[in-house]
Structures are given as C-alpha cells and as structure tokens.
Length: 391
Ligand SMILES: Nc1ncnc2c1ncn2[C@@H]1O[C@H](COP(=O)(O)OP(=O)(O)OP(=O)(O)O)[C@@H](O)[C@H]1O
Ligand SMILES: [Mg+2]
Image (cartoon, rainbow, N blue to C red; front, side):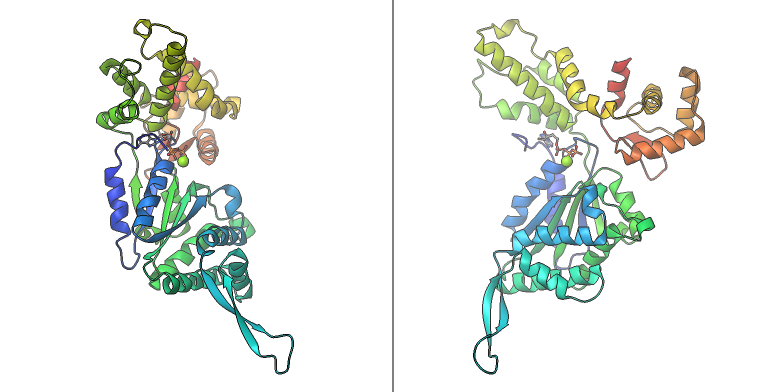
C-alpha cells in the first residue's frame, strides 16, 4: 500500500454505491494499465466492505487457476473457505454402537473440508457443484451472521483467466455463469475484478451478457494535484530541515512519472534513499540536485522495463521500436501505421499480416492490448520512451 492513496475518491464512491444494491445487478471491474493502482485500490475497498458488513473473499488469479473448470472451482472453494471457516454446520452421524443406529449430530466448522464434501456430494457438472456449495455457504452466513449484507469475491489479475475451447474447458465462462445465476436468484454475492484493459473485451467475448453485468471503472493517471499529494503527503510530517520537496522537485517528478502512481512511488523512494544516505554521510543536501533524474531513470529501466524487454525476440523488439517511433507514441497505433513506419526506418519492413500476427502474440504477453476499435496501445506505461532510450 502506498503511504498515502491519492485521488480515487470517485472510484471509491462507485464501489460504495455498488454495495448498496439489494439485488446484485452490477459487479465491479477495475481496469487500467500496469502500475496505475488497481491492486492498491482493490485492497483499499476491503475495509470499506467490512465496515459495511460484507464478507470479503479474494485472491490473485493466474493462468494456472483457469486451466480447467475444476481448477477454477477449487480455487473459489479454497478462497471462500477462509471466510466461511468461522461458521459452523450441523452434521448428522449414524451412531456406530447400539441398536437402531440412532443418529447424532455434531457441530462442524464450515471449512475447506466441509465445502469440498458438499461439492463432491453434489451430482452434476462442475458448475452445478460449485453453485450448490456457494448457495449453502450463503445459507450458513445469512443464518449465523444475519447482519452480513453479502460476500464480495475480489479477484486481482482477472485478465489471466481463459476458456480453452480446444480442450472443451470453459472455466471463465463457467465462473461468469455461476455468479450470474446466483445473483439472479437474489443471493448477494458481488464480483470485484481487476485487470489490464484486455479484461472487459475478454469477458464480453466469453459471455455477451457481461456487458451489463459489470460496472467498468477505468483507472487513469493521477491529476497533477493528486500527484502532488502522492509525492508530498508521505513526507508532510518529516522535519522540514532534513527532507522536503521543492515546487521544482514536485514538478520534475510529476513530469517524469507521467502521472503513473507506480513511477511516482519509484522516483520518490529513490529520492528518499538518496537523501537519507546523504544526510547519514553528513553531505550538505542544499548542494545536491534535488531529484537526480538521470540515475533514477537508469534504475527504473533496469528494474521495471529491462526484464520485460529481455523476454522479447529480436524481431518483436524491432516491431516495438517501430511503434515507439510512431508519433502517437504511448497513445494508440494501428497495424497500417506500423507497416508504414517500418518502411521508413527498417531495411526489412513488416508486412501487415506479420504485424497482425506479432501484435497478437505481444497482446498475449500483456505488453500491448487491442481496444474495442481495433487499435493497439502499450499496456505498460512509458514503454515507448524506454524503447527510444535504448536508441
Ligand atoms: N492512488 C495512489 N496514490 C499513491 N500511490 C499509489 C496510488 N495508486 C497506486 N499507487 C502506488 O503505485 C504502485 C502501483 O500500484 P498497483 O500495484 O496497485 O498497480 P496495478 O495497477 O495493480 O499494477 P499491475 O497492473 O502491474 O498489477 C504501488 O507502489 C502503489 O503503492
Ligand atoms: Mg496489480
């Protein structure tokens, strides 16, 4: 979590409205580029939900969670069991001694084992089993803790979920079907997904009804004022004689960060470390450059961009270099623009079909994404500038 969460009041208000729904018609979907603040915003919704008497279940999704319908069901069970384990249920047992097999009953925790038992005992498809289990959980929650309003299922990195038509496995579609059906039956389970901008198109592709099922909240960069808050608030209580940001420093950080929270935090942490070291060594900080950007950018390149860049093939790097040279650098670009620019700057330019193919592969890597109008953008902010720095 950042020392101070700047902005995002509107997004938080949307969430507050969503959890006031009696019947859940709308679920939350937070999207945005890498480092824009999806995870920390999701985390900061949790205490709000708890305060409003919702249970919170959640975790990170990954490719391995949606290998099959069974794996995603197991994941949901495991996650929800953490919240349900404080509840109990009465399990009847046939007495083993004595005549007539008189039944006794025992109080059991509603833990993973119990959930798995219900799941395994339910006949039918994976979707039927997980649905039946979730319904029983809600029965227990609503009886034993009647002031609970519902359960939030919060999943980060939801863009990693896939259907696998070749293997006839549809974990993503099943997940959506199960929740839609549960919500239709009036059970207050709400989804809160976060993911890259590829997420919403992907959900719609899996199930067209998701267009109406999600309230999409796109996180963008922080405004200048919000950036300023993010930079100065955390050091507001520090002795001004030892550490402070001048107006100039703040502006430098804002402009280099592009307003992306990740970059703001990165730069501020570096500046802070440099200052602390200088203070420790007795250096006169008045004589130091307040924000030594050159060194910080080198470190940022090494820490944030270089790893992603290293995983690419030479030809992919060439393609992205072409993209970085298109005027709309860090904005949108089309296949045609890439083809055109590659003719200008490469000795072996790309054909349209080649560009299409490669962009599809890069989208899978999560480095770029295609928007609903068929144009592409970098999914990693400031990537274009990094590429140009590689010169
Ligand atoms: N509103 C904010 N104010 C201050 N700092 C923030 C804010 N939002 C995010 N940050 C900081 O920015 C960094 C990136 O945030 P976060 O990890 O939530 O991004 P993300 O969108 O989840 O990225 P990714 O797509 O890579 O998972 C973190 O260091 C976080 O503390
Ligand atoms: Mg994240």
